[in-house]
Amino acid sequence: MAKPDDLFRVLRPKSVNGLLRLYAKNPDALLLTGGTEPVTRVKLASASAESRMVIYLGKVEELSRIRRSQRYLEIGSCLPISRIVSIGKHILPQALSTALRSIANPAVRNVGTLGGNICASIANNDSLAPLYAIEGQLELRSVSGSRWVPISRFFPGAGETVLQKGEILFRIRIPLEEWDYQCFRKVSGSQLCSHSLLNFCGLARFSKGRLETARFALGGLNSTVFRLRGKSGRWVPILNRIHCEAQAGP
Image (tube, rainbow, N blue to C red; front, side, top):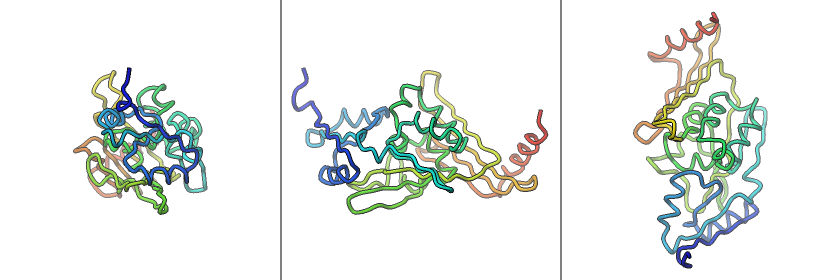
């Protein structure tokens, strides 16, 4: 039987304002929704007696909303990955949709969230490379207000984020741009391993048969995500060839 010191106090706010006030008073509490990330289990196991408090986010409706405008798709940080894929089936950029569908297994995707996948701060998590390539943005909120941060600036170092004490990831903004070529690929250690060793996302847009712009993102190298964008470099002839072959068909 567990001793009182081994137990966590679980708080369940029902509104964003209530959550932010609670988190401001308890900045060392662990935020939890799906709890599927290994890093979450490590934090739970290593929590000190003073920080044995969990704030459960699953009751905060505002964190599970999804909204579309003409230019963006905005996804609440606690919306389950399977719901994102289902709702955004014909809206999400293809590369991001492929990446989300490749995460772990259906059981994990039913409870795991995009916000959790991002905040775990693991460079080879499958959502990061496409989010870097499409230049996603993150809204961070605290009792002091809100701010938008490009995902490329969210990770100052390996295993780190720019989240300040009492600040949460509120939503993810996905630009709805048109791309002629999109791909996502991942390399896993084995069929039993749900995490990628390496993943790659590529986007390209062509005009009159020639490359107009391209973006690449590679996750898993040196504990960070490497990004390349523009229209110059040795990879341009390769993309032009891919485009020509795609136009020619089989």
